[in-house]
Length: 126
Image 1 (spheres, one colour):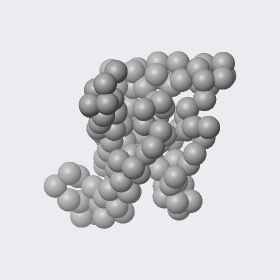
Image 2 (spheres, helix red, strand yellow; image 1 turned 45 degrees about the horizontal axis):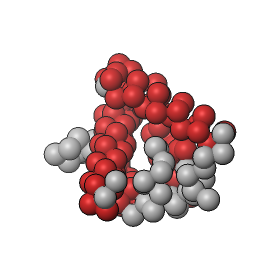
Image 3 (tube, helix red, strand yellow; image 1 turned 45 degrees about the vertical axis):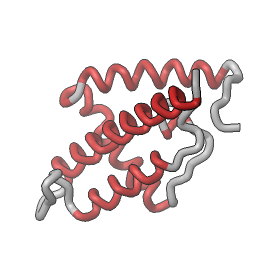
Image 4 (spheres, one colour; image 1 turned 180 degrees about the horizontal axis):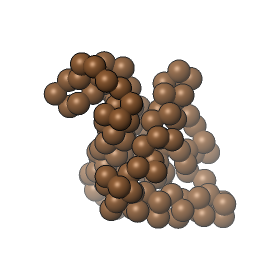
C-alpha cells in the first residue's frame, strides 16, 4: 500500500475508534450521570474523558497494526484516566448490543481475530 493509502487507512481506523469510544462514553454518561450536559450530551467529567481518549487515539504509533486499545501491550493512558475508561467500557460494552448492535458485533469479531493473531506471534506493539 502506498504511504498516502496507509495514512488514509490509519486515519479511518483512528476516526472509527474515536467514534466507538465516544458513543460508549455518551451512553455511560446518559445512564450514570445526571445534571448539566453539553450539546453532545456529556457532563464535564465525561467530556474531558472523551477529549483525552481522542488525543490518545490521534497520537497512537501502533494504529497501523492494532485493532483496539484494549488489545495493545502499551497502555498510554494515565492511571486515573485508564480507570475511568475501564468503568465506561465495563458499563457500556454489554449495552452496545442494544444501542449499536452492528458496531458491537464488528468489535467482537475484530477483537477475536486480533487476540488469535497475538497468540500466534503477530504482536502489534513490540
